Image (cartoon, rainbow, N blue to C red; front, side, top):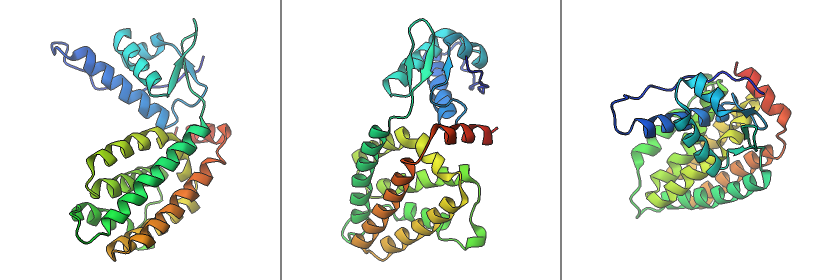
Length: 242
């Protein structure tokens, strides 16, 4: 049985009528963070009692959280032996990257249409992060991974289609763990800054075709890196985070 250290979630008010739901939501969010941050990695096994004891909650919200994670494709229940974090499904990742490509390239085309109302303030906030001198760039892989995710979500959100943004957020959540492995090496961090800057400059100049081409190449590079990921890299990422 894998032993993991899980941070306790914020306690809910026991007098609140939604206490169990709130605790289940907190456990669900915590376990998702543990998977995304490699505290729990594919193949790890654990029991409801272990989670319950470490998080200081009853088994009911733990069970509710785990069933949600099962429906979302993160874990599976094992007959008489607890739960397991599911192995990577690379075929599914390929499909999700293809969907991400469609959503994001459509979004940048819309961002470059002069007659469309878009969120300029959101785009300006991205430029303040990515259009900076090399000396001001972050070398923190975890921070850059979070900024990268926010960058791509913001591009879709700024385009103004709420349903596109909702679907894109769901895709983002499902590929989060695999994308974060892309930021364990400095060359990939440097490339991300350079590529994001070029995409933003093309959008600022209303060059939709160029922005879409740059974005497509950027996502395809990330997608090719995903194909190289091994379980060994996942375990290295877990140890690096400790």
